[in-house]
View (cartoon, rainbow, N blue to C red):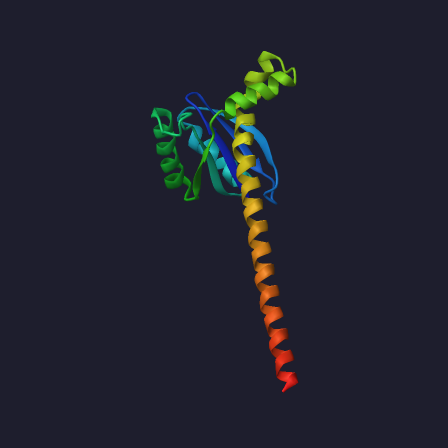
Length: 165
């Protein structure tokens, strides 16, 4: 079971998947937009045993949803209908810009940047989703442990009171 991150663009779709522990995101491939994009995505979903899709949602800098976000929301609906998987829209503002900056700092040639930028952008969409989920699980675990501790403390106190009588 893995999560799939998608960077949906006009010409290409960057694809990343999580490891089976939902800890790290790895770039997998770039799919060129065509009528074959859904069969290719389906093959990847099967290959990696994907159980959910995280789709980059390109909000404007002021947080509003522009025309590109509307196209992405429509694509999310198509993904849900085609694959019957949950699809989460994840704010991707500047993910491609961050990917470009990362590759420039790594002194990657322009030719190689073009080959990897979309799947790196997909990684930059998926990884924060995975990190947030891990933080939420950790908080839930801490709450559960605290509730269990509080409950146990109360039981010990009640037992002590009973012995004094």
